[in-house]
Image 1: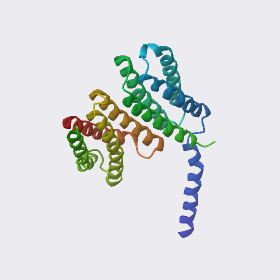
Image 2: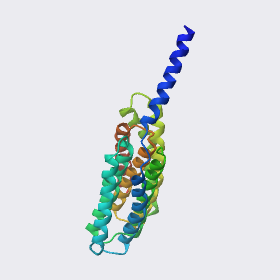
Image 3: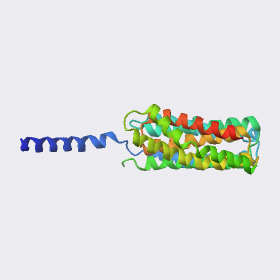
Image 4: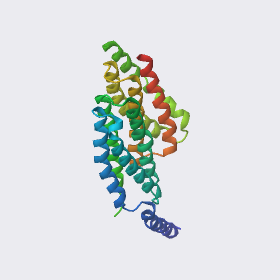
Length: 137
Length: 111
């Protein structure tokens, strides 16, 4: 009986070891590049909301929004990447887009609001970067 | 203005027990684990919400800006938790949406 139990334990351990790598997402260089590029681009653009009118930055806003959209689509298209894809989508829908809408609505934004909003985006991107870097190479 | 600030902070501090109650509404299994997560979530959000409330009380930002910052802070926390993959997303959504509503309502009532 004990031998059978031991065999079962080894079988369970073996299955666990075989299954474990299949459950984790593979390293995604494009995903990591997206985080790095957008960290700088978003931070620079959002900083301008305190000193520059929305209309004066429309080209830069279109470019960064398009890049963010590409990053969201890229993450959504990767297998076993549900959490990171949802994180990107949340950042676009709940952080960046509302900020841009507010900027468009008011023309310019208060510097304290800009500072706090930028910090939220930067910290969120840091978290996504951490998740990307934790993927198996 | 300092009185208003104190009212906001007091209101936020009094929320902790209600947060635990909210978790019970959503979670039946592993309740203690999720209560712990919800308390941590709220403690972090509360710290930043107090700073945002001070900006509002000092009239450095508008009411809508304040609400957007609290909503944004919730989004940040959700992203951090998703990145950590430490909690199931659906359950987290249910808890945090209620925590957010309670936090915003408390501060707005005080202002």
